[in-house]
Image 1 (tube, helix red, strand yellow):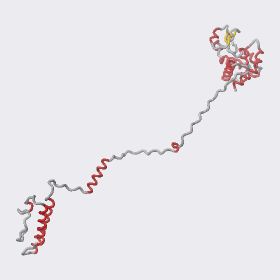
Image 2 (image 1 turned 120 degrees about the horizontal axis):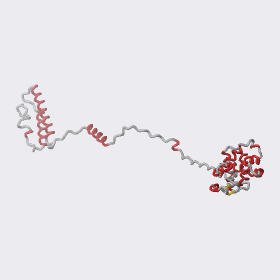
Image 3 (image 1 turned 120 degrees about the vertical axis):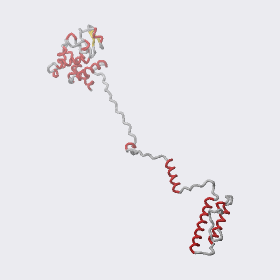
Image 4 (image 1 turned 90 degrees about the horizontal axis):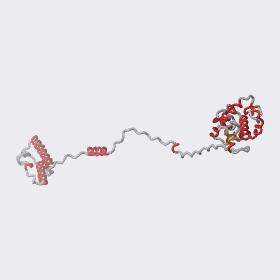
Length: 283
C-alpha cells in the first residue's frame, strides 16, 4: 500500500503471488498479518466519508482474500487433497459394505415345524405279548387200539363230520370197520392192483378191500376209490342214510342193512368201544 491514499493493486507486479515459493510460509504469513494491521489502522490524510468507507471495505476484502489464498495454496503438497467425506456418507458406505458382505435372508415361506405330539414323547409302547399258539389236542388211542387203528378211526369220524352225519352214524361206522377190518386198511390178494395203494394188511376175502371190505364188483366204486379211507367212509354213510329210520335201529341191524354180512350180529359187540373212540376224537 502506498502513502498517497491509493490501495495497492493485489494483481500488480508487487503482489505476493509473483514472489518465489522459496520464501517460507511463516514469513509470508507474518508479512500479511502486518499488512492487515497497517490497513486496519491507516486513515487517509484528506478523508472523505464515502470514499473512506469504500477504501476500508475494499482493503479488508483484499486482505482476507490474500489470507485465504495463503492458507489454501502456500505450503500445500503438489497433489491437492480432495474434500473429506462427510460422516453421513462414510456411515452409509460402511452400512452398504456390511450389507453386501452379509448373506441375504431367504424370502421363501417357512413351514412351521410341528410340535411333537404327546404320543410321540410318550414312553415306548410295551412289547405286545405274543399270542399263545393253539395247541392241537393229542388224540390218544383208546379201547385197546394202537396208533394206526386210532388214526384210521379219526379219518372215519372226520369224513362223517364233513358229510354232516350225526354222532350216532359215526359210532355205527367205527363199529362196522372194527368188525370188517379191525380198523386196518386192507388190500386184496385177489386184486393185485389194490396193493399199489397205501395199505396196512392184505386179505383174501374175494375182492373185498379197504376199511369196510367193500367190493368193487358190487358197485361200491373203483379199487383206487375204495382204498381211500375218506371215500370208503362216505360211501358207507351214504348207504346208511338211505335206510328208513336208521337212527332208531339197533347198531347191528343198521350196520347189517348196509353190509349184508354173513355174520349180522357180530357188529353189536363193538358198539361200546366205538362210542369210546368217537368220544376221544370229538373231544
